[in-house]
Structures are given as structure tokens and as C-alpha cells.
Amino acid sequence: GAGVSQSPSNKVTEKGKDVELRCDPISGHTALYWYRQSLGQGLEFLIYFQGNSAPDKSGLPSDRFSAERTGGSVSTLTIQRTQQEDSAVYLCASSLDRNSYNEQFFGPGTRLTVL
Amino acid sequence: TQLLEQSPQFLSIQEGENLTVYCNSSSVFSSLQWYRQEPGEGPVLLVTVVTGGEVKKLKRLTFQFGDARKDSSLHITAAQPGDTGLYLCAGARTGTASKLTFGTGTRLQVTL
Image (cartoon, rainbow over all chains, first blue to last red):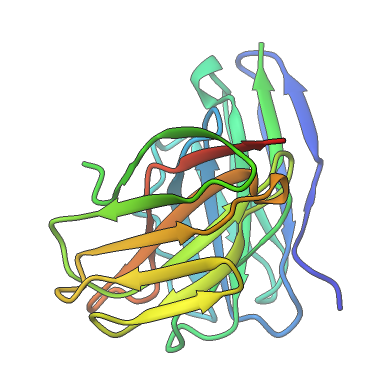
């Protein structure tokens, strides 16, 4: 079956521009997560969606970052007025049920480079 | 504040050697997962441990959850080049099972 997909796979942008990153979760997965990974290090939690509940935005680093999830499926992470420190790999993951052990399935990531 | 510290940070070994990776915290976790990530890909789940003292084996990989559920270890026997990658532990804290806290990562390279 299809896994989590993300697009674009690579994005190069100039400082100050806005970018949108897309995530298509596994069909039927109710939970969706965004993480940021710098230089092959550990993952930094950004935001979490579960069904129709209000998203957990506690990991967003600034108000330049926002995300939405339409129809309980596709999600878009938007970074406004990008800065060089935003350069990283942005990973999306989905999971079946928040009451499970929360085993997450990850997409391949979007590598963002801000010049 | 990094809640999960992994050690070592980097490990380069030869094929056939054994190794252990540690994941430590001062916090209690309701469950802990181990993932492996290869270059250009997202992390892939290897195992979930949920009971203090639990030991799980996956072929040459042995995972252990500490008795107090604050730490975990991953032991690889007779490492192979295919084991190369970034190993990440991730814990779900009691009461916040919806959010995982990821460790700092251990980068393993196995050479012939």
C-alpha cells in the first residue's frame, strides 16, 4: 500500500520568501505530525493533528510557521519570510490511532535550503 | 531541554563487531520506540517496548527497556554494513501518548 508522501522532495528558496510543504498521510490514519531535522540529528516536534481536534502547535518555533490539515487528510506546512536558520529536512508522519502506542510512519521528507 | 540523550553520538565499527547504543532520560516513559533512518529517507520503526524490564529481539538486534522505564538500550550482534544508519529512540510520556520525544540520535557506520 502507499506510504506517507511529501512534496517537494527538495526546495531551495531565497531568504524572505514564503514556502509551502505538502504531506499526504497513509489513508485512514487519523493522526498527522510535522517534525524538523537538522544536519542528521534528532527530530524536533513542530505540530500534531488528531481528527477534528484542535492541533497541538506547541512545537512551532515562531509565528512564521503555520500548518493546516484539510478534510482530515492532506496537510500543508507554511513558513513565511524564510530565514537561513529554517534550512532543514521537514518530516511528516502519520499514525493510526492516538490510543495505540503511537507508532508513526514517516515520509521521505522535504529538504529546505534557504539562501 | 533534551529529554532523551543517546550515546554514543557516532560509532564506526567493522563488520562482525558487536555494539550497544544507549538512550537515557530522567523522565518516565509509558512506551519507547526505536527507529532507524537511512540517508534521504524518513525514520522506520524497528520496535516498541512498553513494560519495564522488557527485552525484545529482532534478528541480531536486542532491545531492552529499563526497569524504571527511564532508559533503553539497543544491542547489535555481529554488525553488518546493512545496519548502517541513524538510530533514534523516541519516548511517549505518560499522559501525552500523542506526542513522541525523540532522542539525539546515534549515527552508526559499519564497514567491511
